[in-house]
Figure 1 (spheres, rainbow, N blue to C red):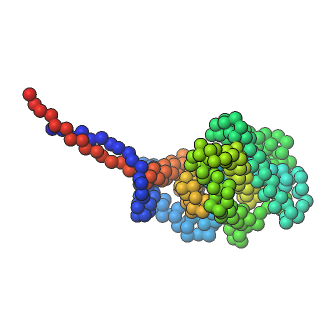
Figure 2 (cartoon, one colour):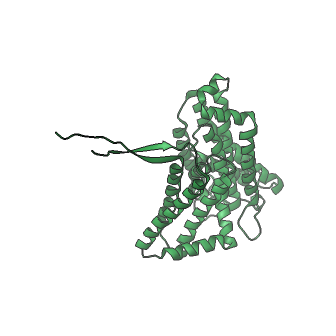
Figure 3 (cartoon, helix red, strand yellow):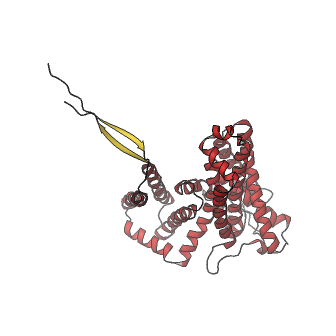
Length: 367
């Protein structure tokens, strides 16, 4: 008699409330334990690193300010991605859409209307950034809607095109006259710089837009006809077509909103943080890609994105604090952030599915 054991993965029909809390907490603790092993291997004290990092981010105004500044572009990009992902339109191009928003704002502030008063110029920059991001997203949207071209490939490829466009501008026609030959534009005029909360670096116009966009997308998804169509199309495209919904309209609308919000994030980074157009990886430190994780951790809920964006902003701020305070190599910081993300995402998978061991009894007779 032997007892063969098989492993079966099943989707949870119901998730207990205690498990929703326990899984993320345990995932975070596991990630810290793994990261501690990496730091200890390098001869560093993990407890000292965590204690100092936590106190400097949560316990100081500068640390909290840095956290919020990191969370603003993540929130704007993630809220737009929520709408696209709910329709099963896989926009991976928020990174490029953010860069195009920054390019549009820089062009407006430096060359088109540099003398305009702030009350005119700043709203115009946000409008230009939204339109530029939406236009950059429109190309893959039309290709998807009309020719059924895979949007994952087109949006990803357009990220690289956007980055090369920024490099062309800062190395070529837009290179500043007062930058000592470095590939930056000149600083944008003072009337184009976003105001900040006193004593912090938080550019509150972009923060307000991010919070408003979270609420607006929630209302759009839950209270409007377009939101209903997005959810139906995302759940069952064939049913949506059968009842007369137009897939092309839904795809294009989702991509325009998604790209436009990423463009607003680009305006915030240009006018609120860097004050000039510079290297693509400086304007957007991977915000467009990280926002994908923010959206999924929020379970595609635009309101929950506020919390997950703060969480991810905290992780990015923690990495920078570790690097500057303890001279931890950049690669080790990336390992720390990667372990956190990997464990949290793995926890989300375990939350949705459960592993069962099935024992099958079998009786054999000896001759």
